[in-house]
Length: 242
Image 1 (cartoon, rainbow, N blue to C red):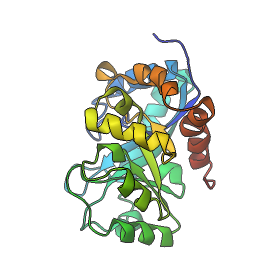
Image 2 (image 1 turned 90 degrees about the horizontal axis):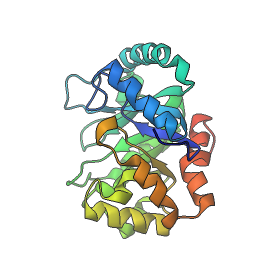
Image 3 (image 1 turned 45 degrees about the vertical axis):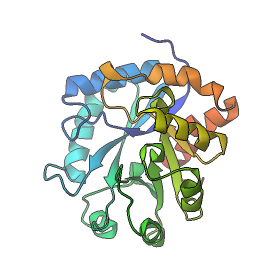
Image 4 (image 1 turned 120 degrees about the vertical axis):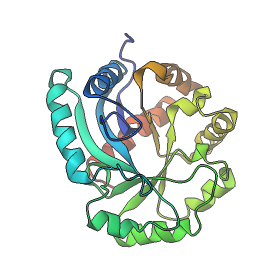
């Protein structure tokens, strides 16, 4: 096991079992969380996918029930677990309706909502979606934009003119999502466009998270690292402004 190296709050994680392509059992979820604890991750927002095209997507109440069971199973680890979603956005789903009928939830019931966009096809009027969420008092966090083929630094800068924030995946730094994503995350970090770094953790056995954390200080200062891994995520947990 690795030694604790960091102080991290993870806002993007798929260790809630039996709900998406992350942990497939409670045993795997416990294994994931045990490993993350060794890296200094003591607070985890479990952001299972919400995709309107997948019929098996569970509603908030169902995931809350699973979360409570997982909390009991991991009590001895002294890790704090919270509920969220990674909500897939397309040109047809209405986020206002999904929030109202409790199909989706914000991060720890805060004003921050994690959004996933299509990987290869741009969402039309994403700015309108952001503005609609703002009218509801919600600040969108765009998940891993370094993985979207149609975005580069100019597009991200334009997007950030609206009231949204950016989360990038730590393991993009070590090529887990290809060379293009690796180049983009370095650009975004260098230009100060990123508000959060998170794990997007799915499975313990096929991750390179520890390597990514060790390489992180090659690209950002210690202060920036603390802000992206801990201070800004803390504001999400506490529902404060960033």
